[in-house]
Image 1 (cartoon, rainbow, N blue to C red):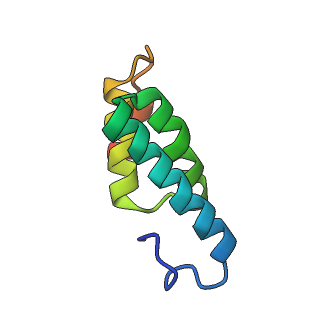
Image 2: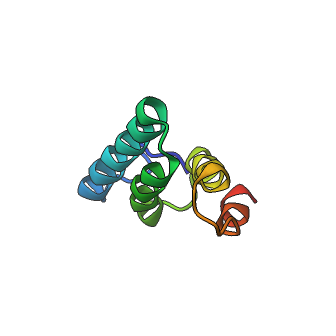
Length: 79
């Protein structure tokens, strides 16, 4: 389910915060190449909407290349 106001018409504030978290995660990923910080931001958005395939892919990929020893969470996001 995409992060759009049409998909979340009654959750405007939550959608706004989730989109902000995605932008924050994108900035960590694209400009700082910091997957660990990107994960923290993306997980905020994921709590609001765990069914967005693009976000799930991004989270899974970040876990795979992160400095975290545990890579198992990546599988759940990439399924």
